[in-house]
Image 1 (cartoon, protein in one colour):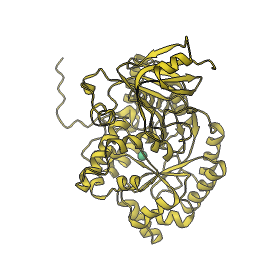
Image 2: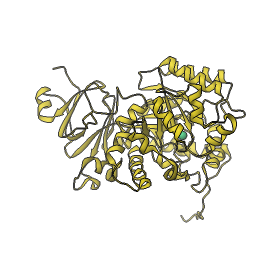
Image 3: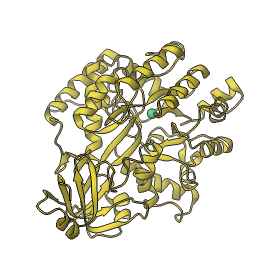
Image 4: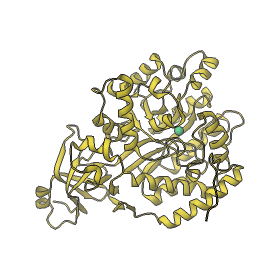
Length: 460
Ligand SMILES: [Zn+2]
């Protein structure tokens, strides 16, 4: 038998393999960055005598959790600053855009490091950055430091008068440079990223899509979290946005559209037919009151075989980078809007957070399940915590009870990045100090103040 680097032993392994087997008191063998065996602890101990072991007794072991849509910059340094009593338009254009516009490279790197650290501590090991990044090299550096897996992009829009804008050719050149700087196959790689909505010309949409297809990489952008994108496309093209994208030839398996809350039947069917993926961010819609419970059909999209993963969007639109928390909400929405608990539950939600999410972002060959040959992205949940006592069905408990709150250890590419609930790759004291200082400076440069609704009384 070849040497291995680590044997994770004695945990209940939620494999997410095609049969969805849960191996009670099982083991996972890791060699380098790869899972080389999954099976019974006693059998793997015999197979790899003397291997270094990590005891996962009384733990639940899952694949690394996947986020299909996460902004790494803009909001992280101003957490809980943007009021929760305004609609998404003012939240974006009165707050997020001015903050993004004055971001320095340091802001971007510390924002990314903070986001990546929070992600890992909640078991989220792979994230698709949403593409609102001014300094992608610095965001990539922050992701590398934390040790998270993911994709990064740079701002892509050619609407008039926007920060970080440009002509369609200029925007595509920047995207091409990103693909060169962060090539496929690396732990941090690039995706073609447009802002989306109605903020791209047809020329840019087609050229960006052609670039992604030619390089065999993904492309992502936002569409229809609210009715405004439909209104804009109907006015400019006479068609709803996803039908228009279909006519342009932009839809396809390379494309990941965030949101898709307000879509009509033709758009829904076009997404299914073209294998276009959706990034579903339920907490974001709740935070800004988007109306997802009245208009979203994400559960139905999932059960009809649509490619869909979960995301947490921006720090001031959902607030926690916790995909398992989003998963429980996704299950709750599906049940409640249909007044039917029978068709979508914790098991479907966990699929969305792992193997189906990995498929939605084009990485299912490498991540999303604990199977031989896949990357060793592994989360160990401490099932001695109260959320797990006493033990019931492991998937119900993972989604409805523990969410991401009991993460003990995390591995990405076979490297341990979280141990005992602490991030090993990050000096948290230094990060806290840097983020506090940069956050204050960022607000001042943007001309914004924390808008406290209740009186803040110095009482020291
Ligand atoms: Zn977004």
